[in-house]
Each structure stands twice: as structure tokens, then as C-alpha cells.
Length: 272
Image (cartoon, rainbow, N blue to C red; front, side, top):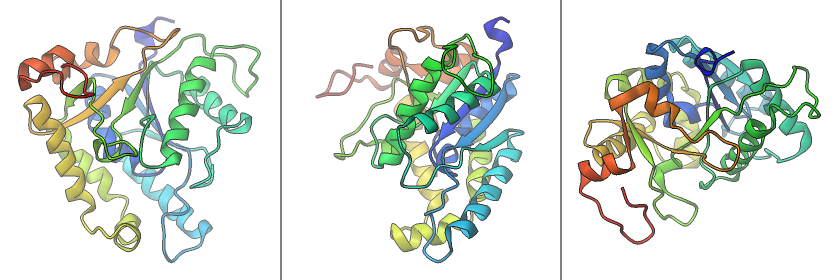
């Protein structure tokens, strides 16, 4: 099977709504180019409530996630880990490896390795290992090994900052201006989160906050709305930028961003 035939893009995020906040605009662009889309969450978001039980909110949030995925014509999978307690261990890794073997993606998107929440960081670490391990035959799951290391991309950290409040610059920004409406519509499916965020985070502007950050990333690339990514380029992972190859001029990479912004090396930011 050639790489081009492995045209599934799989987003594995920590909680329902994480993908809508970070990468569904880019996934929608890939969908237009013939890619199959799969969305997965490590948890059902069972702590995302101030009122309901774990069972009640899990049911609601999985339904919301499935409804959002349906707007993109995507499948939805929940790996049923516990919110707040995502753990880097063998049983959890087996779940993620099995998902990759079943979906056989050419591209995988996951959380930033450095983010405000440990669930996000642990998800990132699990997915990195699972992408590397999916082709190892002595790692046993319900599906046979998938002998191809997917292209792995990290989405922006929430608000584009690390746990110390420092900015994390993307290596590329995708122009999602044509897909901001479906990004909004998919995020709006997660209605249960408005009350939760208002109670716990003190914020009542769920969709507006998403739009502001997408506009900020867009401005970084000279377009109305954008989503930022970094590609995992360590040993054994693909070095070509498949996302850029598929989306063409909609992806502003490194030096292209420099030409748009006129940026120079500033403190610890990479030179674009």
C-alpha cells in the first residue's frame, strides 16, 4: 500500500472539544482534498461539569463529540480514559496503538507536548510513542502491526502559551479562513461546556475566544484565520511535511512566515 493510499488523518486529543479548538479547520481542508477524517478523545471529558455525575456528563459529551464529528463526515472514537487521570502506562498505550493500527493514518494530530494541563501533555506523549510503536510486531494489540510511521503534528498549546505563560511559536500556520464557519459549528456542538467554563474558568465566551486565537494565528501568517502546528521530526519519523504537500499555499512554513511577518530571531522564538 502506498503512502497516498493511507489517506486518513487522525486527530487524537485529550477531551471532547480539544480538536475543535485546535485543528478541525485544517482537517476540513484535508477532507476537501479526499482525506478520510477520524477524531478521537482519550477521555469522555467526565470532569467537565459542576453539576452532573461522571456517567451523566460522559454520555452528554460523547454525544456532543459524535455530533460535531458528523458535521465533518468524520468518525469519532473515545478511548475511555478518566478525565484528569490520563496516565502514561502500558494499558493506555495499547489503546492508542490499537487505534492507530485500526485507522492506519497517514497523518496524526495530537496535543502540544507543553501545555497548561497535564492531561494534554500526557496525551501528546502517548500518541508520540504509539505512532512509533504501531509497526512493532512484538507489541500485541487486537489488530496486526501497521508498518508505516505516520506524519505526526502537534497542535498549538491552548492560548499559544506553555505552562509558564511563555509563547510557543508554531513551525507552520494553516490558512483556515474558508473553514472558520465549520470550526464554529463543530465547537457549538459542545453546548455542555459553556456552563462548565463559566463556572470553573470564569469565562463565558467559548466560541469568541476560539475565534480570537484563530484570528491571532491568522494575523501571524497574514491571513484572516489560522491554526498553528509543529511537526515531530525525531529519528524514525518522516521528515517531509505531508500537511504542506497536501494543502499547498494554504500552509505558511518557517521562511514563508518570515517573508510575511518580517520577523527576526527574537529571544527564544525560532527564526521564521
